[in-house]
Image (cartoon, rainbow, N blue to C red; front, side):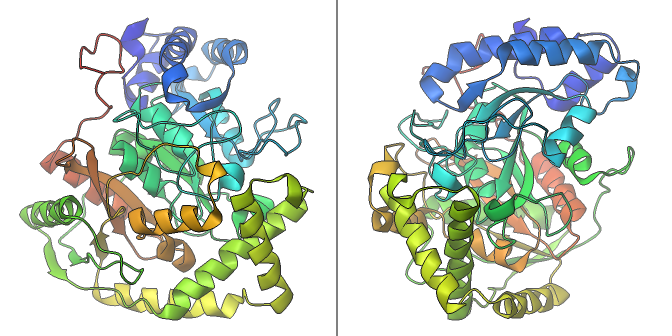
Length: 459
């Protein structure tokens, strides 16, 4: 059954729909891969072995199996979204252990399309930080287990990069899909506001967070996005015409600069887009100081609201989480998280896209930082490390526009390089179309070396 591991979601669904493979055999193969690999990687909080096999058998027995877009595709769900029969841990030892009674809408859509939920993936406490360690384990990057897979969807990214699932759910409040995708060499799509159901209560962080997908191919990202967004079958991405592409390396955070490998990845990608027929020119968005302040205010206020909704005891939370929430309570008392401040930035972004069809820029400024017990370190240490290595994602959550991470070769240290494409509201299909062009111009390694069955790469 190992032949199913490493296949794309598109390939698996086609095989199950046509009867060339059974959903149960596909699920069993991926569960074996999880059992073999995850003790080292630490991607999963919970593996649903028996339940997943039962779900897969139910897919095999469905009369409409031949029409299911995700027939038999194993998926992983991030640990801040309800999955029926599992508790939502949200990366904390102090959240309720009561099992969810029903699926979140995005889980319902995935299962309705034939996907099989094999497990729940690890996140940092309350999904706040761009590294992934919870009370039980540290999630590690399959490309280099000394490095973080990013966060907060780090467990999902690690699971996909190591072939434990072909695709995974993630959500993105300030880069939590795009940062892990960049760390692990994946495609990571954050839809724009209102495109995919995103109601996570306090975990929506004042409307900053969106549900999306991590995948090894653009076709898979498109397939899962279509299911999450409720698009009709056959609504596929079309080849774009000649686009005006803005290219920027400027960090939204003053004093943070991209390293040489990051600069080279953006330059390579810009050349590839020009060779594909687009025009590209340097154009930096203007980042007012107020945008960073407003983003931080909504972020910490969102976490404070989440702590209240979950009825958590501040004293029982990790010190870094407690400090974040305390700042949020201060913001809420002073009414500093004002929606009109977000509206001003969104209007500026929309004006930027009147002159440009897409923005090309980095995701990370440097290589992924170490995989370590970040939960035991101070809030200041977590924040300063996060800003130095992953400064580029947050403004686009504040703006509510779609953005995608696309692999862009290999860095000089052997880790994957990546870039970010950003579009105007409603530009998800355009992002996917251009990402597909980049994959044709410069194909990427779909999985981290050394983890798939039969892969003899030194590990």
